[in-house]
Image (cartoon, rainbow, N blue to C red; front, side, top):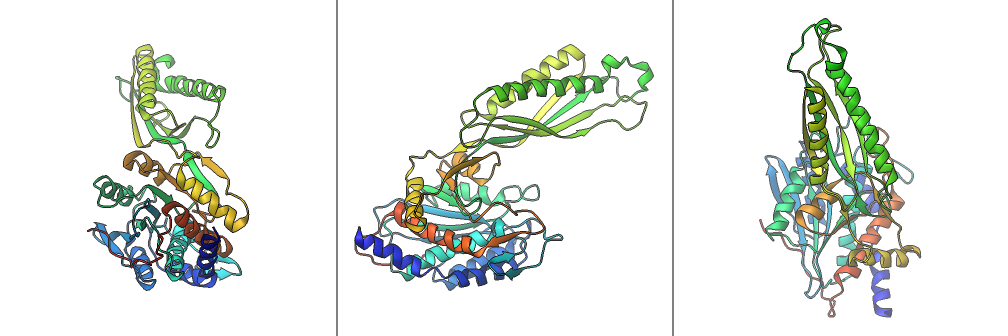
Length: 409
């Protein structure tokens, strides 16, 4: 244990907070909005090369590459992947890149260029400390994360690589989110319900109110209220909360005395781990069929942007590795949390079958015009990533430091 403790100290000695600050600020100065991520992916690849690694660019769409970098292990240990996205939402009126004491400021600081830089510095600290892991590491950056401009093109290309075993991973750590182990999220879907009258948009004087689609819109909203009461009566998930349905948009009517048809209702439905989108779809189908029969109107629905819940159990080795890293670095294990938000972990866990969690510097200013990230938190994350990699992948007995090599193309 003494030798491993010295290895931990040696690795942490190579975490250079000021270098992380410089690299994060330089990354923020590279514009990489969703759909035009090429410069951001190129920056990440160049940073990896500077630190002695050999990344590969996988062009998902012209000028929009994912970045993959494999650091092979000596053998005998599991493989860990660190992952993030190189795109940001539009810069808009956000503060320009800059530094104010401990704070690195600008679009992408928290979401999530700072985490990507911390990821690279963690791997670099392992290399500089001469730590040879038994299992391998993957450092990956994807495009097309930020919706609705992004369609998850980058994550889905990486999922294809994982399914085809071009790239392998026994666990994935996404380097964003709160400074905690985010290990569970609700599932989510956007629903679209369309209420239509066979009479078309005729004068309302010809249609009794009880046959007006607007009247049945009210019935639909009451059904949602009943569902919400049902969800509130069921015990919540201990980490990510309870099931919920909500309305975001209602589109109806074009003139004061014309029948409002069609009426479109859009919103989100979020559900707990243990439930699937099939049950959501069946519930909506039954509800729409019942209202259609009662009203004589058409009730059509669809589900879009559907993502199943994910949950990585507390007993999983990657969580144990982070707990040990936290005890070593701060004196206590990081807390485990869940969130109603959905993200790429929902995709990796369900579509690639790889246990996934998030651990990042913060989730407080993302998507705001005052986006910023704490340098102290970034350095902390770099240390946590490095120590967790040691704990999860294991250390080679001969401590020979392997050279970085490229991913399969």
